[in-house]
Every structure is written in C-alpha cells, then in structure tokens.
Length: 394
Image (cartoon, rainbow, N blue to C red; front, top):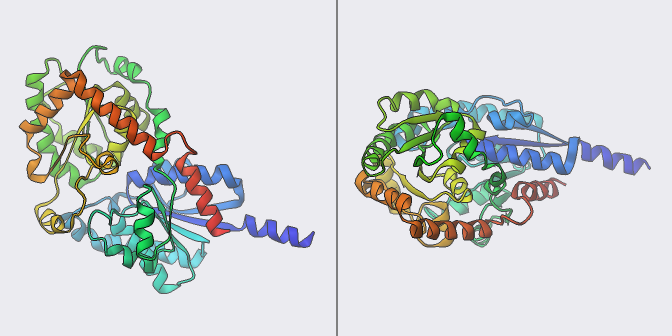
C-alpha cells in the first residue's frame, strides 16, 4: 500500500514547462495544455512562456511574447539583447524548478537557445521540440546539431520521423494540431451579417502575418494586389484578421484601403472569416494550413528582407514553401516567393479563384487530401502529442 501511495505521489509531482515565442506557437501550446489536462487531470503542473491562448488554459507566463515575435536578420539582430535576456530568464527558471520535461514550441531563434543553454547547464533536464524547424527544407545539417540539445521531437508531418532518425534524433509523428481548429471554422453567415457585408458580396480574407517584420515588408504588396483585384471584381470587400500586438500597425498600414475593409482581432471571428470568405490571400505560415482546413481557396506569398533572402535561398532544398504544397509535393495552391510576388500576377491568380469554379474545385480537392494526410479523422493531434509527452516523462 505504501508503494502504491509513493507511486501516486510521484505521478502527482510531474512538472512540464512549455515555452513558445509567437502567436502560432501559443495556439499549439494551448492545445497541448488542453490535451495534457484531458489525459492527466491535475497530476501535471504546467509552467512556462505563452500568450493569450495559453493563459486561457491557465498558464501564468514568465513574460509576454512581443519581443520574440521577430523574423529575418534585419529584425532579429536588433532584438538579440532582449531575446538573450528572456533566454536567460527562462533557462534560470527551468534550472530552479527542474521540470520533468521542457517543451520548446516553434520559434527556433528563441526556443533553441533555451534548449542549448539547458543542456549545457544540466544535461539531465529533458528537452522536447514541438514544431521543429523545417530543416528538411533548408540546412539539413542542423538536425545533427539539434540531436545534441533535444531528446525528442514531436513531429507534425510523417516524413519528419525518418529524416530526424537519420541524424540520431528521436522523433514521433503526432500530427498537426491545426486539424483541431477545423470545427471552429463556422459562423461565416453571422459574421457577414454583423459586419454589414451582403451575403452575395465577393469577400477576400487577407492574412498578413503576426510579426511586425511581416507587416512592414509585405503590406505594400498586399495593398497593390488588392487595388488591382478590386478593379476586376466589382463590389470586392476585404476582411483582415490580426492579433493584438500588431493591430495598431495593421490599422496604420491600411489607411485609405482600396476596398471596404473590416479588421478583426478576435480569434473566433478569424475562423468565422475563413468560413465567410470566398477566397483568401495569405502570407505563408501556419495560417495557410488553417485556411486549407476551412476549404477556402487561396493564394500565398512571402517576402523576406533582402539580406535574409539572399543568404537563405542558397540553403533552401524544398520545391515549395506552403505547407499544403510541401505535403502534397505539388503546387496545388499558387505560391509566390520574393521577386515572383508581383501584384499583377497575384491579382490574376486571385481573380481566377473568384470567377473559375473549376479552379476552386481543384483547390478544395487538394485541401481534402491535405486534411486526410494530416490525420483529420484520427485521434486529435494535441491529445496524441500529450500522450507521447506523458509517456516520455513517465
């Protein structure tokens, strides 16, 4: 009986530290927290760094995310002192509290620094990477380095498991948690009515990204493309979901917008906007997977800082950069990178999706295939990730 009590006490004592660095990681962290709670109840204590979504699941973040949500050399370099201070703060907290596992979610410029610091200070602390960087697409040798400071990768895609195994890093396929947001992508008719958008008005959902660098680099191209598209699609309306920490910049950047524009910050409204929209125009990122799961036809582009692109393009090994195209290994969704992201070309691609039922149907078929490969009808990925993590710390 005493042994059983001791075992129960040990189970109750489990601690997990979750650390993310930007809103998309915050969403994944919140879903993982929900999965852990569902499987383990109150027997696992969760600490770490997160945003609003993780706070809604009960996390008291060590600090806010805004400083970490940067990308590209021009943006990362000035932020390095602040990032390093946060790395030290998170590392010190982990060394002091000694969690059974530290789960580093996406944002490698931030989270991998913590993993390296932890392993250097105390190799016995177990580190888990959730949403590994796409090293299979660029600089694959980084996987060998990751094997020195990560004990496990929770892989979002099935092809990542043999890739990391080749470099001596254990990986387990858990599926992409974005699948779980599919059920929330409803309410499009109600959103149109609330915003005063006619049921038959052509509606474009615009997704400019959640980083300040993305707003700065890509908004001029968004504006020019929409301006050209509006000349081809009479009565065009745009809806722009954003997140609080860049909302002020977005509102400033959209002054004098060429169409009626509705900016929304609520996450439920974002998913309703996907349901309401006829077509989406997005900066590449996790949001493209959400759009695909909503079965909304889309065009995707991305523009990096000139130096970042010039250095990075030499190491890019993948044929595509949009998640759906990568997984299907074909350009099922039009994607435009850097110099190819020309407003006239993208406006033509968007117009085709508004006017050509065949083009829309082909994209939706591809989105159905994408969802199947991500495991839309299997066990929820965050629950599977929670199960793998709990087994790992047990």
